[in-house]
Image 1 (spheres, rainbow, N blue to C red):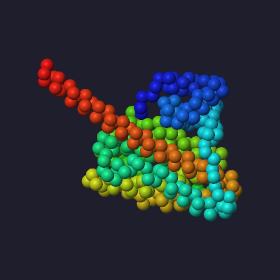
Image 2: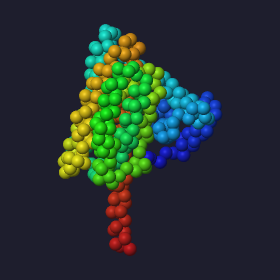
Image 3: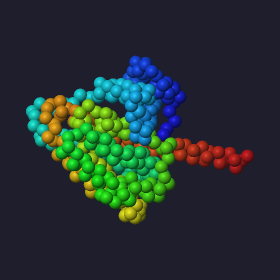
Image 4: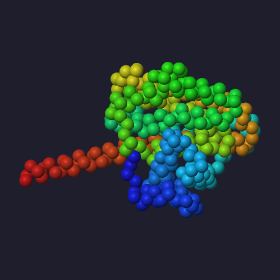
Length: 336
């Protein structure tokens, strides 16, 4: 995690203890109107830690913590929706199946599918430390993916749960817990030196926060359907490029198995999610919610890659600056 300026962080330290939500509204609007700013980063970090606490300790119903956190979440989500771009779905699309095909085309056109970061993977232009930094950020969301599927499954019709529980079955190694996806990831993470909390970027927090809002707290199943379906459809193409790079490095198939499994499974999961949700997308409003959530989730995923690439390039510049400074000092030391 980058060191955030004390001013925005102080604002959100105050936010955690406020009893009057109206005093927070201005801070949230300021943060969300300037994404990637230190204040936006502080907001994402604050919400991330609220979400991690919820996952480990529950909703805290009937406590001051539960009441305040609910108000904060609701305020942030209201402002997010208010500021989100409007969905522009062609007027002639009135059939749900036609809408899903149109949506899938928009999903595959999203910039996340060909993000600049993957050019560095393709060219093998990443050091082992840069791979470690990438994996550390990736791990934050990977570890908890199954929780979003499980939470979302609580709010969907019985028939739709069949697809979600098949997804969870795959996430947990199809009955072999040692092959559960978080367990497959750890040997690879350790091979490159392990994860560190100070690696994590605000954009990484933002993706987890977005999943929480769309799957745990959304008003209707369309949000989780659009967001998670879009995520699952696009992941394999990204992971194939990561996998190709790891194989170029000579890593064993055992070490890269996490990415092998996801390349095989996720695209079918994405199709499965949309097929399972199709009977419950009936109106123009349903189309708009599903589309908006899909784009919001993909924007957040692309943001993770933006943050990682920015971090890599910044670290390279810092390293280059230190080398130049050292080279300039060396002649002075020799003549002293």
